[in-house]
Image (cartoon, rainbow, N blue to C red):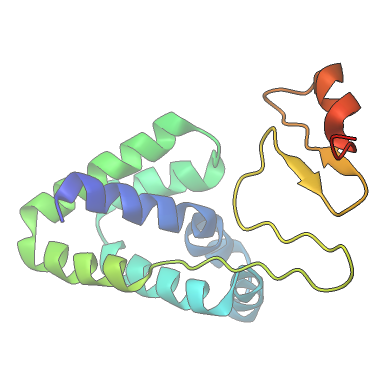
Length: 161
């Protein structure tokens, strides 16, 4: 795996955990951080801690990670962290190989189960989709497309009769 792709995967995976890994650890007790981390998913939290242990200690990465923790929705902060991770991986091929195997072993599998009469299971995006449970379909509104056209509403529940 090339370092650009690997750095992007690492940052994407770590970003939700960085407030806990970087900042909360300084302000809260260890048990509080562990409890909050496990709420994000015990397996993912353990992987995040393991991965962060391999990256921390690098001053530019820690500085960029603090920015991502403080500004979680800032694409520039994430880009800066990706750059620092990429530089580290390019300079340390052994670490790059180690983290590539880590990345490949942390594939996420999404499962959805519909339980009960007329239940709906969703395991992916449903943007602008029609969810039908039998009698009536419900158009799904999207933040990007908040208005569902009237033509969709009129046909949502019809069976073509």
